[in-house]
Image 1 (tube, rainbow, N blue to C red):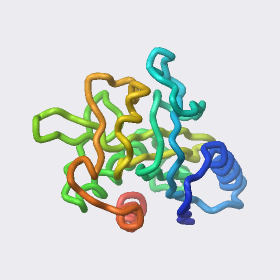
Image 2 (image 1 turned 180 degrees about the vertical axis):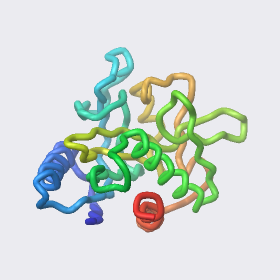
Image 3 (image 1 turned 30 degrees about the vertical axis):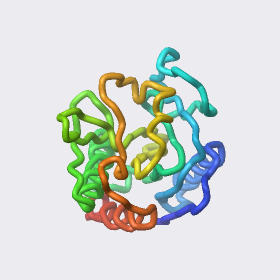
Length: 208
């Protein structure tokens, strides 16, 4: 397993190219599985279920991601983890639902390290937190694609992005709930610290 960390923002096209190349290499049994931790410049991505009406203001570049899901935002202050795993090599039969559940569990365990209770919601992709006023806001997004039983794309956790940038879209097609971040919840965390926890909790979820 390779852990790849990028200190500078990565262009979205470069990330897509890397994932395509690595998945092809894994499929040919010549490449290592990989988790890539990075940040993107401000942009919107459209999943395969994205609706044109959910793009409210294209103030940033918009990319066709090829993953499942709808519109999402990536930008400074958000940690993205792209996961390239061969599900055929995991225990049991390849199971996409179990893989998505494991991604959720990975986020939940990581947030718990910072005393944040991340929760799943039926019918709402991603991880959610209950705010002091009782409302619910999304703190992490999930979007995946699987090719030859090898995964692409992954998760995005909001450390301290400009939350107003999510206003250009209806995030994941859900308009009745907002978006939050660790900073918004009063938790000051650097990308390096979050990366350490992500790597440790990944081992417990996917390799434990």
